[in-house]
Image (cartoon, rainbow, N blue to C red; front, side, top):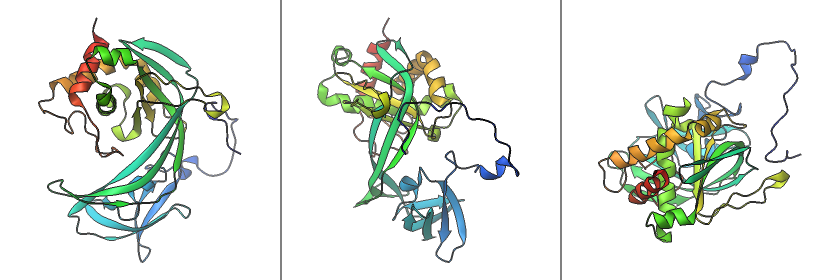
Length: 301
C-alpha cells in the first residue's frame, strides 16, 4: 500500500538480529538498491544506484567506469541489471528527463530577501524520454534518440523558493524570460550549495517551474505562485539532511548564488555559473542575465 505523501515516518523500534548491518549498506547507493552493470558474459563492471539508473545506464548510454567507456545494450530495471559492451569513448550521452514535482504542507517558512522559502516533504517523479549524443572532445551534438523508460518516484526532503510575479516584473523581466531565469538560478544555487550543506552537487536535485500544482494526496498542498517556484531537494529517499541545511543557510546561500553568476566572465552562461552537467533539459532554457536581475532585486535592501 502506498504511504501517504508528506507524512514523516515515526521513529522505528530497535531490532536485534544476527550479522552486521554494514553488510547490507552499499557505499555507492543512498537508496539501498543497486543496479549491477555487467558485460555480456556476466563479468561485473560496476554498480549504480537504482534511482539514477534510468539516467546513467539507459539503453544506448555511454557509461564511464575507472576511465573506460562502455555502451549500454540493455537496462533491466526489474532485474536490476544493465548489460554493456566496451566502447571507444569518442562520444558521451545526456539523458532527457521529464520531471513532475509535488510538495507537502510546509513545515517551516520564512522570507529570504524578496523571496519566500519553505521546507518540507517533496515528491519527484522522473521519466527519461530520450538522450543526446555529443562529441567527447568538442561537445558538438551528434544526434538524439527517443526512449521509453518507466518513471521513477522519489519521496524526499526539499526547500523551495516561491517567486512572485511582481518581483520578476520589478526586475524588468518579460514573462517569456521567466522559465530561463528560474532555471539559471536553480542551477547556480545547486552548484554553490556544497559550500553550505557539506554535500556534493550529485547529492542534490532541483526543479524550477512557472506553475507548481498542489493537491497532493495525504494532506499535501500546493505552493504555486503567479510566477513560479524553485525546488532544491535531497537526491536520496527520505532525505539526508541537506534540505534542512540549505534552509538554515539560505540567506548566505542566495547571496553567494548571485555572486557566482554575477562575477563569472562568460556572456550567456557556462558550466562555471548556470550550466549543469546533469540537467535533464540539456541546459535549455537558461537566462543568465535574467538570473542576475532577479537576484539583485530580491536581495536589494
